[in-house]
Length: 352
Ligand SMILES: Cc1cc2nc3c(=O)[nH]c(=O)nc-3n(C[C@H](O)[C@H](O)[C@H](O)COP(=O)(O)OP(=O)(O)OC[C@H]3O[C@@H](n4cnc5c(N)ncnc54)[C@H](O)[C@@H]3O)c2cc1C
Image (cartoon, rainbow, N blue to C red; front, side, top):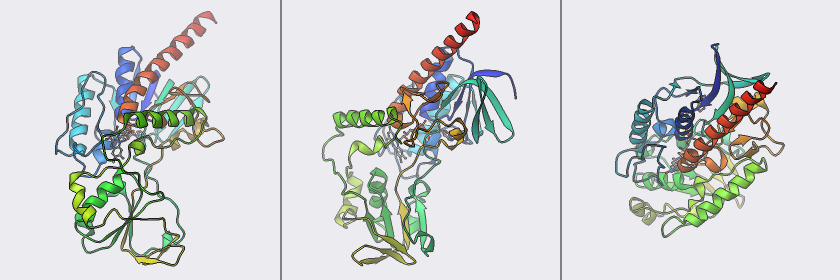
């Protein structure tokens, strides 16, 4: 264990990099601990067929405009941009460092990663959601004889040729993956609610309203809902053929999983070989458990980016800031909150 840092940032995705940039400018001594082998945050793990044309839009980082659209894969373009950014601003990123827990020792926070640890006066958590894919529980799931995988493990459509694939989930990922898989094999689509199709451009007003809704949830300490899922679903040109083949005729949720397929409450049975769960993610925050930040409602109550239960801790890319634009803005807010907290603490020390 070295000396005491003014701040520790966990995660070097859009949220962590934006935070680190602003901490640097504010002269706050910090490190950024990142679990991945390479720069790129979650973007380096996106499936190969997700191009820069396919993403909703990646926000700028402070001092560096985002790469433009195009057919190049997002999992190469964005990580290259992040790598360049880290180098250009000389951000103090250490990797691979997978933080397993953060504890409190008196005034200080201790960040543990295996047998290494860092002591810090403040903490900014920027760990995103990619490492905690969410798969809902269905009776019988353990007895399924076929393959089950989450969208985060999507190997490309060719891996499913000759097998009947059930895609579960009503978000943009499900639509995109069906658009590819339905061209090479038989598919079924199940969503909890009927999908909401958007015909024109993304409605910014609706986007702002959705962010406000998630903000209100985290202010009350409820688990955050997804911001990026509120943009409505749109079919792109490359999905039209899948649409003609009936890939977007959605079925309601089944009741149980059986060894060779799924069954609905009315007795209907569909045999399937693969269940692909496009059912989203949850915040990757298990390492914060010792700090007991969760409210009795199950979420972490925030005031801006500051954890109400422990104001030494900021959360960015969480709840209303779980989008690239949100993460970027939250990084600035968190860095300012850290600087204010350090200033207040030093005044306290001087006057004590
Ligand atoms: C398929 C898909 C497409 C998307 N498209 C868009 C889009 O077009 N536009 C948009 O605005 N948003 C989009 N989003 C959401 C957007 O990607 C995220 O909100 C944003 O990139 C998250 O940035 P982040 O910095 O919070 O997290 P991440 O990019 O996930 O970075 C988190 C970092 O934290 C590290 N980490 C995690 N846990 C630990 C730990 N315990 N210890 C150390 N390090 C850790 C990880 O290694 C990672 O580098 C999309 C999401 C998905 C799944």
